[in-house]
Amino acid sequence: SIISYIVIQRFVKPPEKKTKQKTQPALTQEAAKQLGQQAESLRQAASEIENKRVVDYAASIADTAEKIARNVEEDPSDAPKIRSLIRHYMPSVIRLFTSYRTFEMQQIEGENLSAAMQKIEASLEDIDQALKKQLDRLFDMDVLDISADIAVLESLMAKDGILENDKQAPS
Image 1 (cartoon, rainbow, N blue to C red):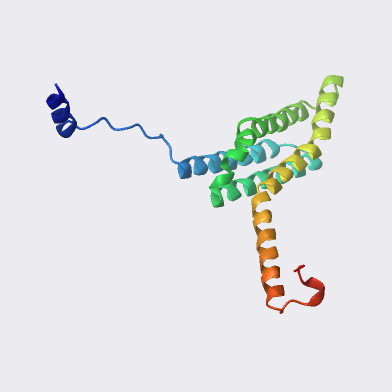
Image 2 (cartoon, helix red, strand yellow):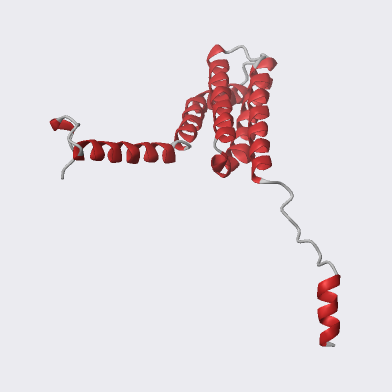
């Protein structure tokens, strides 16, 4: 029986291990593409809105989403950081603008419609700022790396005596 085992091990090809269906670059490209499509959907939803302030916020939010998508394409390690943005935030934002457009097209000054439109308008600045904050957070590690590089460079220059006295690092 041990001989059978050795023969089987040598001549029978072991089953291939299943690999992940999508590679990290494919997931990154998919995330960036999906976010870009959501930005376009937002622009489309806002294209028929008459309120210029609301349209401006839609443009700003869509621009920021596109910047986030470009950042994720350039730095795939940021892809997991935008999952909630793609799955939850952007679809909700698109629904808000779509609802606003629908309400505006009714051209009725009803209490419910007016209240809903005002709530949407009131939330737009917060939404815009939140997406800009998300974009800013994607650069946290870059800023940390740059700060470390600057500290090392200044330390080396001070050690070599080529940095001005007021900039020298402590010895």
